[in-house]
Length: 623
Image (cartoon, rainbow, N blue to C red; front, side, top):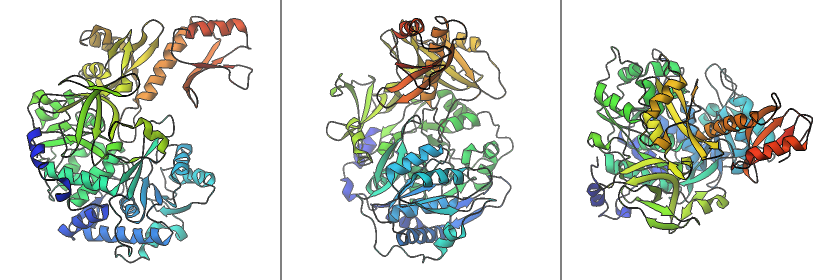
């Protein structure tokens, strides 16, 4: 494992094209299967029950199943440039369909927890040849969502169904039956090339159509090589396969790279770590399967701090682990090092870089919070931009600026090329929109999102400075700070917190706690909102956009309530607008009149938000 930047530079002394042997996903899978064909590649527990028998797939069986599915897709008209949409939870057929689609065409995994309309919009954008989806299954509404997708897809979309636990499937379109009719040999037309698209991965927020990143075979092959170069290849690892397969980390790091190294994956049920029963038995799963790496996104790791190990034998866990997807609270990292002797560090990456661009090192505790050293042949700069979006200069050591990346893992662009103008700058540098700094050792410290900055009277506040303090409160499980509109300061910092299940604390107590500990007086949150649960994405990231909108509605609601007669103000919500981006939509319980309009206009005069009014008796809205 790399320890310093000098280690990376030594690896780079030999050109990349002389070091990388496998350039496609197909080659990576064959490499992994050849290590020990009869070894278990997957263990699957259909219900996520610690005591149920597991279903095992050897590498030989899995490789044959992937080849059969690739041949099936080819027989149904899928070519190298054709996407295959996949709408499945974490079941073995998801792994088979995903990998097979990269061999026959392009895999397009979709977050099955999105609304039917969002899924339909993604399908419209990508125009897949096939959709592999869960059939009618108790506890899931995927089949019902597919009806909306099919109705929306005017060109006709064939759906291949996977039979879920306790569910059914259309016999004529049953995935397992159709695959069984195909031979287990590789596709007759050979491998794709490194430049072919292998994956379409949707990314971005949940309030508008997510962007679709085009990830090539070469992007994936490079990333798997780089991770092996810095961490070594160890087929003895047994890892949790609980990450969603619609997320780049779950696809590349936790699936393709694991299989390429001949490691064994344990799928703890279709819902993975979202299954509360499975999560409660986390330590028993470690004991039963001999799991070697503590894994989970930071929100999962935070939950594990409340679950005692008890009498479970977790000696198989190695003393070093990494996480990603969002920042890991320092207090959580300290807990695991103090109680279990396991160092947990956070890597850094994103969909547009095909997952990690920097990886953590085994360093002393003063490096807690660092995202480690860049991968070989990956370049990271911290820069300042001018007001036209051009690079003004490189930042000094430990100076915070925007992170930009250039790497063989950087995607070629989005499916909609119009979006690429905001993605790249200079000579192939990708704008991450993340803030960070590089220290004197070349380690990357991610300090927040550029768009997450809270700007109070011209003072830039990094939300992380607030969140780190709140996470030290004994009752706080999760915390997120955002800006709330203010007529005087522009924005004021506020925070949303989720409490630990067995703990209690009032908003006033937590506010006082933060006020006494946040280093910058201007950064102390002016309000704390205690909520039952913070909104999370499918991979455990806090959806800050939802919280920003909540803060906007709260502030404007209070502002207008003071200016309008009691009961006149109805609903306040943030809606998406094709021209302005977003609008504050106001429902006013009155007929249209100039006096009320003038009062609302006065309230918004010093705010940056635009608004639209829906009068009680009006079928439309007016700005």
